[in-house]
Every structure is written in C-alpha cells, then in structure tokens.
Amino acid sequence: MRGLLALLQRLFPSAIAGIEVRAGRKAAALVVAVCCDLTQIVLFPLFFEGAASPWDLVLDLVTAALLWAILGFRARLALGFVAELVPGFDLFPTWTALVMSLPTVTGGGPPGPARRGSAPQIHPPAARQSDEAGGPLPPPPGDGPADSRQ
Image 1 (cartoon, rainbow, N blue to C red):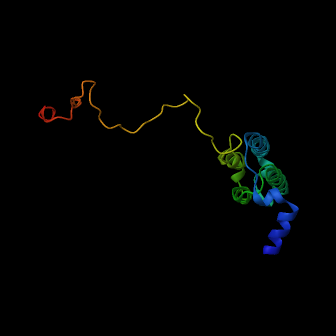
Image 2 (cartoon, rainbow, N blue to C red):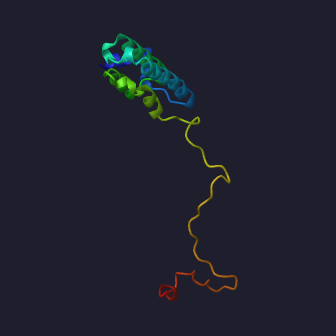
Image 3 (spheres, rainbow, N blue to C red):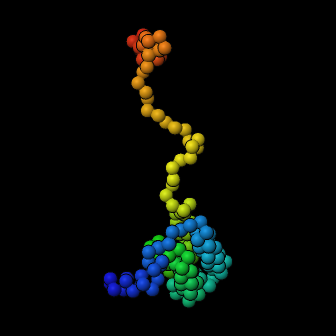
C-alpha cells in the first residue's frame, strides 16, 4: 500500500497532497460542478438509472477527474462520486454542493499583525491613582457600601 501511495505521489504530487483551495480554483471547480449538475437535471431521462446509465457514469468520471485536477484529491469528492452512482440521486446537485462546502483560503498566508488604528486597543485595568492633590480618588459609583443599599 505504501508503494502505491509513493508511486501516486511521485506521479501526481499535488493530487495526493491536496491543493489549497483559493477563490480562483474554487470558482473554476464551481463552473465544472454546475455544468455537470445542470446537464444531469436537464437531461434527466438519460441519467436516471445512476450507475446503470453509461452516460451518467462517463459524465461523473469526467467531472470527478476535472475536479480532482483543479482541487487536488479530497475525500469528499470521492464520496460525491459514490453518491452520484445512486439511481435518481442526480436530481440533487451533489457536485455543486460539494464544491460549495469546501473552505476557501483567502490571502497569501497567516494573518499578520493588526495595522495601527484598525481595531481598538484593549488595555488591562490600571491601578487606581491618586488625584493631583495627593489624596485618593473617590470610589466609582457602585463600588461603595452606600450604593449597595439602593
């Protein structure tokens, strides 16, 4: 099994490791998925039998191969292919739902530090200071025993 996995990884390095799903790749995969699902819905009589229909099998194999080439190998795409073999399941847009469910990576890497002024800074509460005359500040409302009676 390891030998087969090593061979596949040598032949298709991005297919086994998976490709980050960026917005452009997801859009391309979505076009392929929508075209496949629309074809299966519009031409329902040709695809109703599921795996028994040669047209359905060919369309699903081509779609799976294209999505694999665009997105890399993903377990949910393999599960989607198996689901597409169920008779009558072609009326549900499986490929489109699978592509839409993939998380999209935005940006080039991990988020950097926040820019100055972009978010409010939260500071820990400071120790109470005395007023300018040197005496202690009065307690804020709600802290004293007089406020607890109200």
